[in-house]
Image (cartoon, rainbow, N blue to C red; front, top):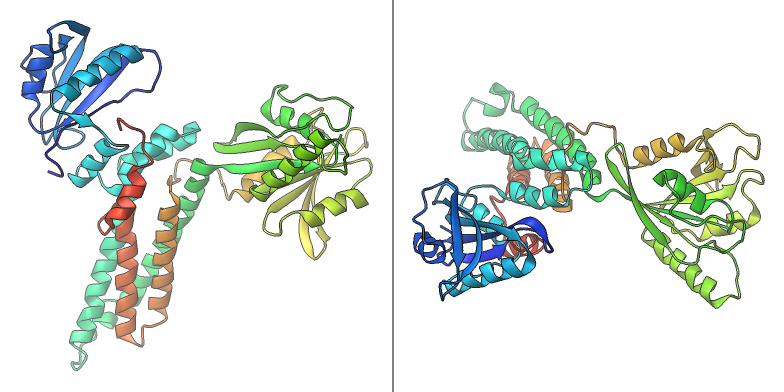
Length: 450
């Protein structure tokens, strides 16, 4: 067991609801159940009970569930107290649990105990938070697959393959003076190539899944009156931004989130970029540049009737060098042009141009497809791994070590070391080798009660 003390927390979201849950985990909780509800609970059986305070007065009537160790989420004794979901009732019930010897749980402490007691591995623990935070149905399904262990099994298969390969490499070192050659006799080179291919495939699935978690931050930028607010409304499918013919109406950034084929897009409408003496508009323009600095993609809107003007070009050269940009030629209906996607060489770089009409919606599907392409999304939601940044970094590092090992087959000692490092990086994903400070950082981002 990871800990002997007892922890408690409200496990349901803040606010009012039909049902609220207080969760308790720790050592033997039978005495707490008796003193709190006057019952000797049968494992995994619902008990209708009156929860009482120290004076014997009723706090609430609800359901008590008892899960004895090790057959519980945390691997310890667990009580779940289901009452009426009012915040005052929940706080009174939690306070009673604290009076009976529990302490308030830290963020993510229940899940951390499940990990430390070998109920789940670290990747599965992170999937708990990902499932709670999922912004789309695709993300939720991917998080559930990880929680059920699919990602962990893929990583473990690679780790096991590396362990076998390392054994062969070490045998080659041990029998270097003999006539046998374990690497040649067991086709270890082919095994290494197979592991590299499998790792590359897993990295691809993880990169796709990463976008399910984070999505893309898309900033609409350009001169006043080019249709930024109209495009935002078109993407949302409802009129959220005010649209008029008066230049400079948008003074502050307007943020909205949409879903395109399972990928969250965080779309930000901004103030038109121009020289202005209006102090309020100038502040809005400063905020526009601030949003552009943080964007994954900038959609630079221009008027399709005039094309890219000198003023549009002046904006383009000020955009950050690393940001992906798409030139959106809006109002193609007024320009008597058909919607289209094209590429052009501009300033030594290839630029994607999309002609569309935010007013009629023509060509907006081309824009959606381009954003998905930039996100690296191929619509394989059923295969995506909902990876975090640390997973991507570990997979990338393991790939680098495997590549280095493949290049060191003539220097077997160096190859053995690269394989060891690759295995170590993969094992860190599931928590086999994970420093305590990383665990603290991971679980501190969970909600209290989970």
